[in-house]
Length: 337
Ligand SMILES: [Zn+2]
Ligand SMILES: [Zn+2]
Image (cartoon, rainbow, N blue to C red; front, side):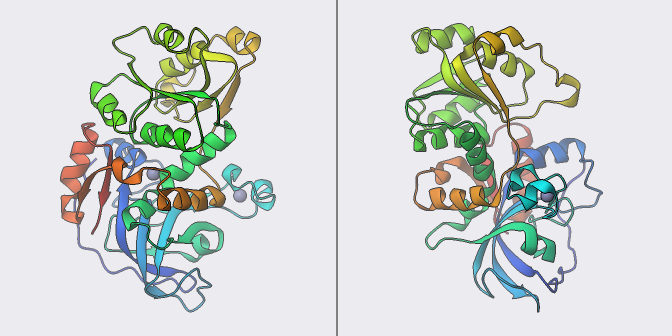
């Protein structure tokens, strides 16, 4: 897909929303997928970018808050429908009809972004805690997804956790599992570059899945027991097959990464799931409470956010940084217009 920089008219401030002067917008794996091959919910030309922090430039007449002109906001892209059974019972993470900023509305790779009334009513918008770096306030979005997953998987004290995939999401899972009290964390990837990246988050062990028999290596590292928790933070069907082989009895497997549609039926040994009483846990998106928790753990340093950010640039650097990220040489890039 073709991408670059273009001059566009200043967006208008929606009557029930705000106009945000973008401070930081994070570049996400899903942005890269869209840059590579388009997105069914995006019609070109379009402004991407859904991990947004900024300062309120203007508020609409009917804007109910949070904040007023000059205040700092962290904006996650999810706009829940507010009407489905799940929203009505407070389970926003299961909303059946949510929309996203940067898909239904233009995103944050711009100087200004209009936050629509719907997002203010049913979205994920919070004031940035005092002292929190605006770059970290922007990447609260992926952290929120990881918090949701580890909440579902009840990651905690005494757990050995295997994180399969050492991209930015895997790195967040490593530091988050540590914050939640995990006993031992094993980071796995097929790429030596990504393993080097993950090393900065100090997992207890790093295993190359391309150079070793992974299940065997994990048995060695866990005294033959396997791991209580395995998180698949990659799009690999093989990883899901192996996750089931590496789980301890009663273990929880968090299926965080989706699979390509053509490879979404891996040959998992379901007898292992049955006889080892394993839990296969699917997780996607998050609820507003996870976003609040993400801002908290980023603000108090329990999550090492600064280490995640490997690339910073202005809007005019976007094409170069995006190309570098498409080549797999970036952990987390942020654009600061
Ligand atoms: Zn994202
Ligand atoms: Zn809903």
